[in-house]
Image (cartoon, rainbow, N blue to C red; front, side):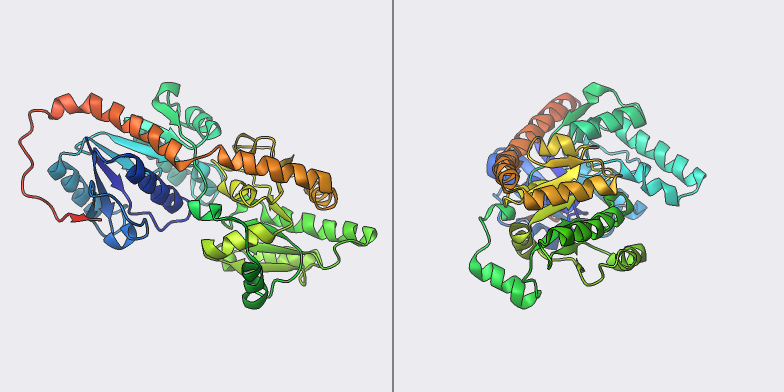
Length: 397
């Protein structure tokens, strides 16, 4: 079987984590089939060592251009691929020479993201995306919630969608922070106080305004108790400069000395923040899967998260669930998790167990079965094709 995987968006947040870890897991599990990683050779190096049945096929440029589409189609045709995996949802239909499998992480673009577009653009985007999904040989949804959203929103039949969960990056499994790690936070980031943590993208549906409002109310409540006077809120995420409303909320809540916006930090540093945080707070309004709560759980950090979308499915009974639209419910949950030590101990143990339920190797095994099923349906039509012609530019990884 010849499998192509489109890796051109591997540097993107979320999609990149998924692509890197699925390719690594397939490399551990499958030495029999041939894999072609279509994209930048530089991006492939981020995956790490791969076995000799994995090859890089250079294709530069954005995957949204017509030129790139034509080049990708030519590569798939020349290699006689049995199936191509596009690890993210896209909206421009592609007529490809082999069946394609598409991973849908969420449909947030058609919910919150659609508000910035005109009615005509929203309608066009929706209909093109539905055409892409209807043309897929199989749709991989990262949660049961995402599967149900695809069914309801786009009218896709249940049996065309397979639920295959995400898992956390293996770098979050390297044990607890050492004394040296904690000292590096103090030296490099000047963090030497107890803190609540949010880590993730900075988007309206992530509900950061309410996190800040809940933190402001929490500080007032803790002051009455005479506890945690130096508690801070640390927000780690991208593109903070595009969201001035967050700064305004901090000032309005009177916590400008207690909220720190850190911007992006590498995983090696993020794992230390997870480990040291008192509570991880993630009351998102919408998540297709929601990896950050699991990442925090892997470090034994208690989690407060939403009772909506995919999050109850992901965290199980290992987190305190709240209505993400109720600031005081978020505040009360944070207060309880901070103060109640038996609850903290219970959440810590349950969190470890919950994080272990998700595995990239298990997910890759399911994906491999999908490839085999899809390729098995398509192969009879390809049996009469001539032998492979001149090899394209392919380099062993």
